[in-house]
Image 1 (cartoon, one colour):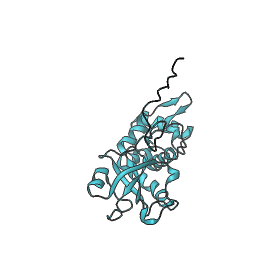
Image 2 (cartoon, one colour):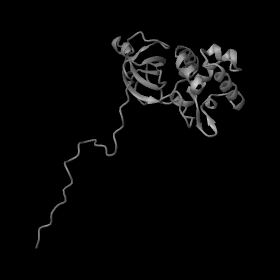
Image 3 (tube, helix red, strand yellow):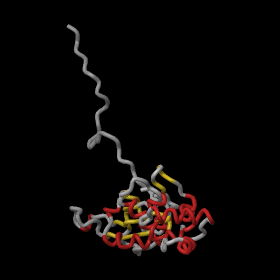
Image 4 (cartoon, helix red, strand yellow):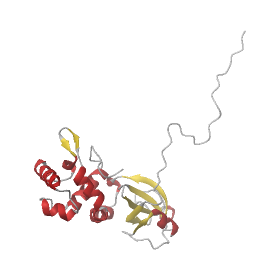
Length: 210
């Protein structure tokens, strides 16, 4: 009688082995500029851990790719809400540590949500040249949808107003747009659009790489 052979099942698995794809580790490029939206010195309240065991967390927003992250923070440092510099500088000063995860708008604290729009408006002014380029050169995404109409409050009438004004002469600044069209605050529209993208309430992403 032939001897029955055992099917080879591969090497023994490690303890706590997980099958399936590994979760991609998130990171922020060191040269990327970030702003601290909120500090959770004792971590998230809903975490079922004693306060001494919780990880201090900073909720941050990166520029100019506009992505939200939670990052380990050093509770013994003098890091402040709305503090802004490169991630490398935060690391060097031992204020922030490694990235915990990428987050969405719904994960933000009430403090982060209150600060994010004015911060985005300020950053839109800082990166004015890039956003002016959008107003000057944006095109149709589909036969029925122009990229300009993805900005909150921009309908068919405003779209044609912008297109006709830029055809006569390219825009130079946000103030130029405000002077030559009925769009009073282009930076505010940019900020509101980025928030919509961070909320993942968008089919197309113009500015955020979230």
